[in-house]
Each structure stands twice: as C-alpha cells, then as structure tokens.
Amino acid sequence: MQNEKAVWGDGEIEPVTGPESEFGEWGNFGDDDIMQQQFSIQAEEAKKVPFEPLCSLAAEYQSGSPILLEKIKVLDEKYAAIRRTRGDGNCFFRSFMFSYLEHILECQDQAEIDRIKANVEKSRKALQTLGYAELTFEDFFSFCKSSVEPMGEESDHVHITALSDALGIPIRVVYLDRSSCDTGGVSVNHHDFMPVAGDLPNASGSSEKNNPFITLLYRPGHYDILYPK
Image 1 (cartoon, helix red, strand yellow):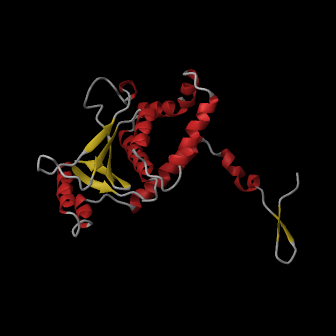
Image 2 (cartoon, rainbow, N blue to C red):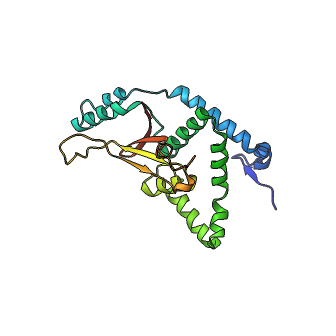
Image 3 (cartoon, rainbow, N blue to C red):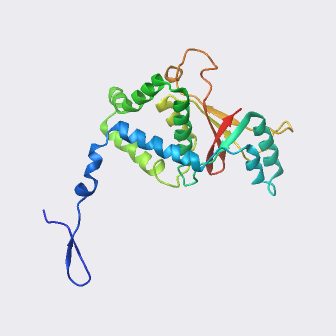
C-alpha cells in the first residue's frame, strides 16, 4: 500500500500524518472516561445557559400572538423555569439527555443507571432473538442515519416514541402553539410518551412513579426543557 502524501505547489512532498498517530490515544479511553467527559461538558454548558423564569419566554411574544401570551401565563402556573437548548436541529436529543442526566445526578439512583445501561446494550440482541435478519438491521440503521442523526432534522412523534420505548423512559412534551381551545378558554396541550409498563423506571403499579420526570417544551421547530414547580 502506498504512503499517503500531499504535494505542495512548488513540487515538494509532505508526508500526511495517519489517523492512528493522531488519534491513537483515544483507544485508551473507556466508557467511564467518556461519561466523565460528557458530564463535564454538561456541567460547563449549565453554567453558560442558566435557568430562566417563564416571564423571559413571554418577553419574546410581546408583539406577537395574544393567545401565546395567555398560554405562557398558563404554563407559569405549573412550571418554575425554562432551560434553553441550542437550536441546531438536535435540540430534542440534547434536551432529553441533559434533563435525564440532571435527574440521575440529583437522584444518585444507581439502579436506574444500571437499568438504562442494560437497555442500551440489549437492543441488538433483542432484535436477533426476535428473529430479525441482519439485513433488516441495515434498513433500520439507514433510517436512523438519514432521519435521526443528521443536524437540522427535527424530531417528531416517531422518534420520541421510539426513544421512550427503547430506553424505558417516560417523556412529557408540552406544546406551545397558536391553536385555540374549542371550549373558549385557554389551555396548553401536552402528550405523555409512555413506554411499556414493564420497562418503566421503578415500575410498581403506582401512577405517581410512572409520571414523566422529563418535561420538554415544544415550539414549532424547537425543544427546550421545562422544570415543574
């Protein structure tokens, strides 16, 4: 195999450094190192993007739709704050992961950590056990690469349902839009994405324990995190 080389404009040849020499040290990183790095990044981002009261959201719509201002007042009765996420097309996954990791850090629930790790690791084995051919895996991952992973691709009902079911985590999505209420009053719609009961964290038949602990605010094209009072 020929060595890769770069040719400069004056005819001189410069050897190109291979990826092994530049990134070889990554081979020494384990799962714990990667998780620690992620926690560090999340902690740093938390300092840059603090909680904001709901009134800051209302300020964005002062010259906009009156119904949105009324709905924000309704939200203010139930939610204490909002945390904004970067609007780069991955805001749903970023909001979900940040909120979930916050929950883990606050609860220090080792059983939940073990449960989620097991759920992530068993997905491929589950498909094989169910008799799916390897070809179907390729189709599935092709869908993920084209519709889930790319930057700028908005997450919809299908993605949220799949994530909730796969990880066994209930998710509440609150919708802030211009839709009016048929009864004449102002209300804010929400939808709870609930996985199979047996996969719920601490599932014991208690409706209180099965309530979503992750709440996301959806405005057309964007997700942020809401914090209940």
